[in-house]
Length: 183
Picture (tube, rainbow, N blue to C red):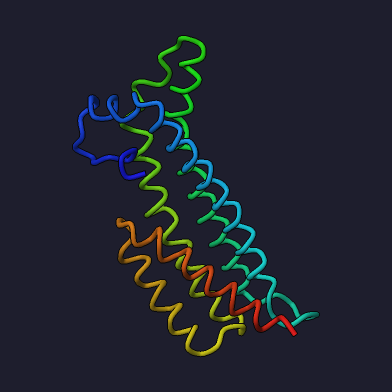
């Protein structure tokens, strides 16, 4: 994704060079599809996380924030994946039909996808993280780690740390809740 998103000051020729390599396009397509799959998985995770708690009790307001934050973050990740997917898919299909594909959007769509991925998903994901601490499912240490991670997620939004921090937190929460639910 780093090559595809490039730098904001890169010229159009830099993108033409990146997207002209068919092997690179296949990697971009694969990464974009995996990003879309991860967005769907995150949405499912958020929905299931919101369902945790005491059975036969009315939902807490924090579970609504978890659902909404998860939905918004998943939607941002999904649209980012689509933005990353568009140019290489267009060029790959263009190779089959002798069409040049999307040429003018090569520098724009990857930047749009990057902004959605790291900034557009960070704020709703941080809201989900903080609200999830109010569900009563986390041990005290995880509550503190979650709050610190949520703050870091927002403060480091324009960096790659966002793309690493969120999946690590999701995996940790999933494992801990799984252990608490398992007999």
